[in-house]
Amino acid sequence: MKTLGEILRLSHEFLATKGIAESRLAAEYLAARLLKCKRLELPLRHGEVLAEPLVEAMRRGVKRVATGEPVQYVIGCWEFRGRSFLTDRRALIPRPETEQLVDLVLRSRQIREGEHPRVVDVGTGTGCIALSIAAECPNAKVLATDVSEEALSLARDNADRLGLAHRVTFVSASLDDILEPATVDILVSNPPYIPSKAVDALSPTVRDFEPRLALDGGEDGMDILNAIAEEATFALRGGGALFLELSAEHAQAHAMTRTLTELGFEQIAPHRDFNNAERFLSATLAEGL
Image 1 (tube, rainbow, N blue to C red):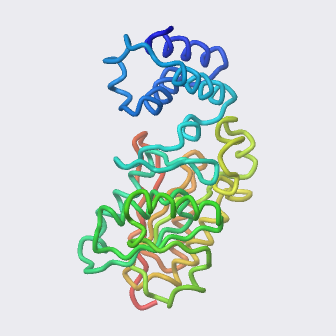
Image 2 (image 1 turned 180 degrees about the horizontal axis):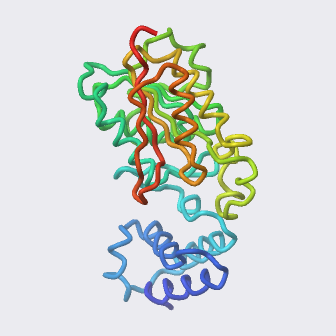
Image 3 (image 1 turned 45 degrees about the vertical axis):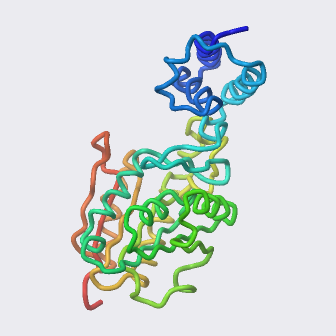
C-alpha cells in the first residue's frame, strides 16, 4: 500500500531515468487526471492511500510516458484558454503560444467593430482556435477547415464537449469550393511550418507521436503558409485581416512579410510570443483589390 506522495516520487524518478523532460510534472498530470482533481491540489492529498485499480492505472500511464508518448495524449485532454480539449494522435497538441494567436484575433478591429464577423480557421486540428473564438466572441460566425478528416472528427468531438457544435462549422475543403469571394472578415491559421528536414530532428516525443501532416511545411517550411496567404486574397473582404502563427526558429516573418506585400496586404506586423520571439504575423488586405 503506497500513498499518493510515494507514487508520485517513484513515478518521477522512473521517468527521469528514461530521460523524460519535466518528469515530475508528467507524473503530476497523470495523477491529477486519475483523481479528477487539479494538479495544484495534489499536495493536499499526498498522504492518501490509493486503491489498487488507481495504482495500476497510474502504472500504465507512466509506462506510456516512459516510451516518449506525450502526457497530453496519455491523459487524453489538455487545457487551452481555460477549456479542456480532447487530445490524441489525430491532431497537434494545443500549445500555450497559440493562445496568444487567439488573443490577437479577439483584439482585432474586425472583431471589436464587426456586428457578426465571419472568421475562418484553416488547419483547425483539435479545434482549439475556432472553438475559443466562438466561445469568447458569441456574435462571430466561425468556419473551421482541415485536410485531415481524423482531425476534423476530433474537433467536432471537442465542439460537442464544449457545447459549441451549433456555433462552428467544420469542413474539409478548399476555401474557394465553399465560400463566395471576399466574404470573410478574419482568416486565422496555425499551419504546418517546420522545414521537412527539421521535422526529423525534432524531439522523439513530437516527431514520433504528433501527426507529421500538422508539422511538415515543406522544404523551407513555407509551403502551407504561402498557400494560405493565396487563399486569403480570395476569401477576405477588403479590410479583412489575416493572422498566422509561424516558426520563430526559422525566421519566417521576414519572408512572409515580403510575400504578403506582393499579394496586396498592408499593415503587416510581426508579434512576439512569451519568449520574445517573432512567432505571429498579422496583415490587412488592402481595400479595392
